[in-house]
Length: 77
Image 1 (cartoon, rainbow, N blue to C red):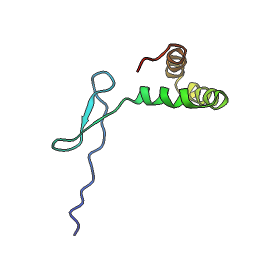
Image 2: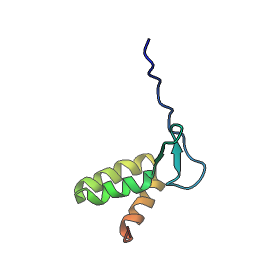
Image 3: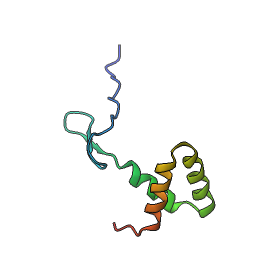
């Protein structure tokens, strides 16, 4: 029998985004879902970006609205 064990699932953090998720003894993975989505949308060509936002709005209008608003604001890295 193999010593492989399934890694734990990422669970939603109760605190704001960019909080570390524990995955092992000393290992952490930072998850910034909204930041990653914004980066993807910023890199996408305008037609594809609009297509994604329209499809998202059909499922989660408030999230699509929030992302559109964030895209209009300059991001500082």
